[in-house]
Image 1 (cartoon, one colour):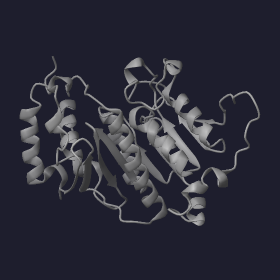
Image 2 (image 1 turned 45 degrees about the vertical axis):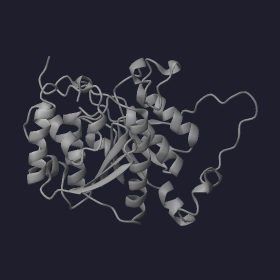
Image 3 (image 1 turned 90 degrees about the vertical axis):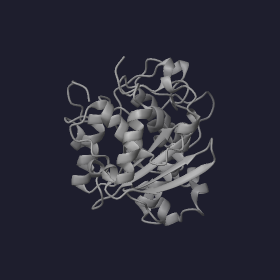
Length: 312
């Protein structure tokens, strides 16, 4: 959350400058014809009519947007207040020397429109906050979480409004060289019921978020520089592998939710796949972080991350 004038979103229809030579004529049917087989022609048209909101256009959010655009989703709301920096180069889809200093939301929009120039695209350049959340979620069929790990207020408020409006939400978070994923579906366990943040301090919220996302903790054994994690200072390591795996998982969940096809595991279920360890874990924690195993994991995590929970 930032103390800025509320943004109600801006519709975009700009296109990148085409390369020299004859520009190809865009055809939706041809562009996404290779999806057919895994989806039917009728399902592809359904996807074309769907509107997805993505908060965050950097690490995972940028990859989510591009993958969903290639799936053929026809409309997006995207939000981010940040600009690209060299520190983003190790993982973020829109981070290049040519985009340093540019708003992430604008770069992401240009890239998506270069895939499908017919997109109905609305940008929220101040990120998501109390002043624009209603507009951000207005008319959307699905919310996809691409927020920074430490965006506690924005995340809590967005999930709370999704719950009130009956909007399904999915998250796929990069942890190490893998992905932890969860779905929050209408009428099921809410984000707050699972993570139980309440009025906790930010370091405690970070610990509960980390433990709740990945109860199996598949990523922990190969953290070779523990000092790189500092929950109190809002910093941690990242990999491009994790971010790209997230896009594949999140977009697959999106397809199942939007088409109503396939089993959708909702909280208190969580899944984690770690490519480095070649392991997949499915966890079920009734009561979320109130579950005895979760409570124990939080206490162990408090010891493991004791230094990172204290500001230096």
